[in-house]
Length: 232
Image 1: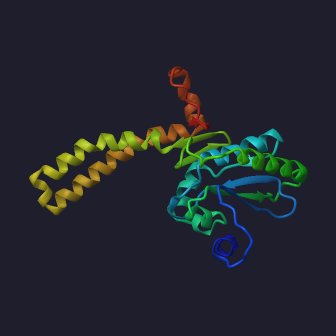
Image 2 (image 1 turned 90 degrees about the vertical axis):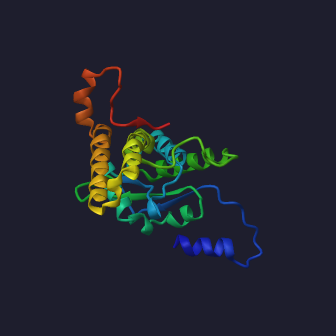
Image 3 (image 1 turned 90 degrees about the horizontal axis):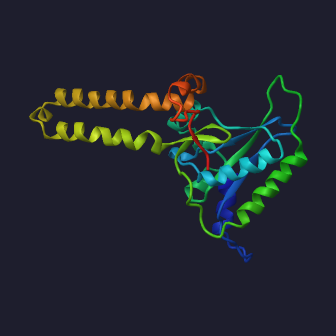
């Protein structure tokens, strides 16, 4: 599929002039889809620059197309199991080309089909938007989990503060004489893991559970809890 095409395009012997690959969008759909699923996960957790996905979502919403992302926990486990290795856009990400897959879906109980003309218009808008990108994308995130079409959780929301909180514990663990005892060392690592889980879980749950965030929002009106950061 895409890997064979890339091999022929980049390593072929044809005299046809080849342009530079800046971004790529893979369309994988059957006839009569009712929903569009954006697959961003690639091999080893690689994802495209979020600006590329946001551009497609903005154009799709302009034409009232139904857009879905994977649920946050589903995306986490999909990344954990390296499910992105089978994605059609994964070969592009391996070459550091921002890419994602638009997959057409149709539920068993859904009879209405998506408007193909509107879908093609959204793709035209995406191509026109990307044609004005004269430099590589760098204004957005390169690791994130979507919580909705226009909302996401970036790693900076919970990852770096948790690491900073663990530095004193890790430094103490490495300098204590108990470090020489493997059992004490394992207990220390377990304690660090528990603190990481306890410190990061509340923020992640607030970002992924809209009902929980809505229940707590009146108590903290200045926090603006709403299920994750707003996608730029």
